Image 1 (tube, one colour):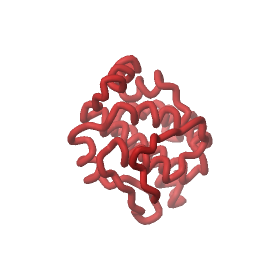
Image 2 (image 1 turned 180 degrees about the vertical axis):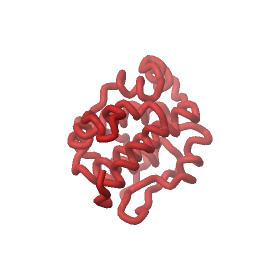
Image 3 (image 1 turned 90 degrees about the vertical axis):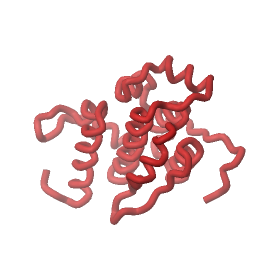
Image 4 (image 1 turned 90 degrees about the horizontal axis):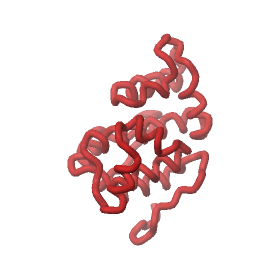
Length: 166
């Protein structure tokens, strides 16, 4: 991977997050997060998430992620229970997110990475998130405001990847 020192992370309206872009976001803002392949699934090791969130991640990750997955900042704020104005203040003051918000955001990034691998693009994954679930619990998009909901969505993706009947 190319050196990233002194290079700003820029993501502008892309419908697919490249591994390099996501690695840049996380490595730049979340200490030393690295990715590994766990069987067929691209996921962040839980120990690395714990290490990164122990001191919080920079608030800029919020904006970078929202742009990368084409999610309005207001919607991402609702999912993470953070007011976008608060994020703007944190970014301007170079503050970090609280531990729970940092962890929630990293798990959301991990979910999007898995969804992108399965569907081929964030656009297609976003369409899947909006479709009602087979289990009568609404669209997976409505689950994302809790970490257990993110895990439920990820479990559904893994079932599809492994060709389990839904």
